[in-house]
Length: 462
Ligand code: FAD
Ligand code: NAI
Image (cartoon, rainbow, N blue to C red):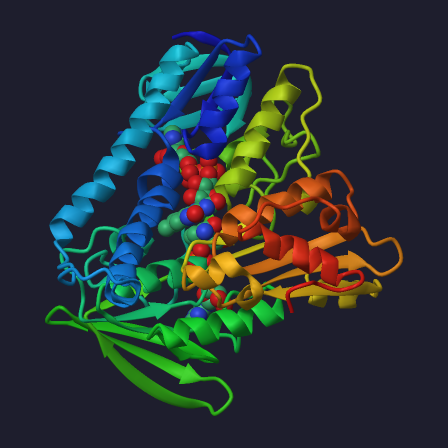
């Protein structure tokens, strides 16, 4: 048994970042992690492996579609799936070992096993009970289940199974046109699978800017993804390694079936709190099974905090990391802060899709007067040279004050470009501030400046 200032439960982006910041602030820190490797969902079965497969399959797509146009005559690459999975595993290993190194460097103890909290100030792992002045729960999330759909992680898979399929399927049904469905659906479509996305709503990526949703769906269709919209999945049945998906078109009230080698269930994730003993502790939960916290990330039980996917807010690694740092500062008696109004979201398809802040839809609901500055990547020289002219940058600014309220980008490097706008928003900048900032030529970033110019006297290149 050992005694700590802080014990963090879970070594995902929330937990490991929190632990490192706690140690940097001079607190004696341990992390309990039940998985064999550090890094949580994100590094093991989430952000990192999915981006490795997106990168590999995007490279194949470039070779197949754009090399010849640039005068690069090579034989079309063949896919060695085993090697692609090995590459993905190497990327995971490099990252998870990197966290182990950081733990050693910061003198953080890794307690291996699954934690229970028998009482405030105590964390039990197996036979051992450790003492901690502060406990930070960062236990993350798991895939949500769908009635009538039984996941076997072989034929009917969640994202975890989809990241290590035995072979590339000839056909795949993706249930849910959210972030996971579209990223992994893109991977398998590029690798040659016939991909059909079945979505409950009439739009993809719910909550996103409406214009982006339409453009994104049009581009994905052009890339070969099929969509069945307004469809409620009733059940899946597996026979002889093939799956049959039954869905109902909600408007017509008609039932249909579709067959595929693999079904990916991507209908959201839910907080993971099993085995922590929260009930006994009397920790307050939301109706959606998240741990309730106050502005300092403390639960209703003093000394017990929670961060990341297990609390409210977007289930994103960088949101978990920000909360991890802020909660550490709070525990150390400082003033941790997260600006929830400026958390970017990125979908790593080609083109990328990125957003921050308000949408036109949310501003209309709020009744706030706003203006729109939009610039198409077709007018950006760099994008045209790189076959990446599809998409746009759209900046929303307050009609009176010109203050930037949100931005929506679909196009090349959108996930990088969005941060210029995040920084501007953090500083309370106006669209004119961005428009007056010199941007290097030729860069994709010029499209951001042009969109800012479009909020005022107008862009130059359209
Ligand atoms: P997690 O990363 O889930 O980590 C929680 C850890 O706690 C786990 O390792 C678990 O084993 C451990 N744990 C749980 N209970 C206990 C216990 N009782 N004792 C000990 N250990 C315990 N987000 C992005 O921002 N960008 C992306 O590109 C992105 N891509 C994704 C792709 C996929 C396929 C998936 C599934 C998710 C993706 N996400 C992405 C979401 C991102 O992974 C999560 O938001 C992030 O991992 C949340 O971090 P966390 O620290 O809250 O929890
Ligand atoms: P999601 O919430 O993004 O999308 C789920 C989709 O499934 C929605 O479009 C929803 O309408 C649909 N749906 C729900 N029930 C359905 C049904 N019965 N039939 C058909 N469609 C149905 O969830 P997803 O994609 O599973 O991702 C989970 C979380 O992981 C997200 O919150 C996301 O933030 C995170 N993530 C983030 C990534 C990134 O930042 N690039 C990448 C992957 C995941």
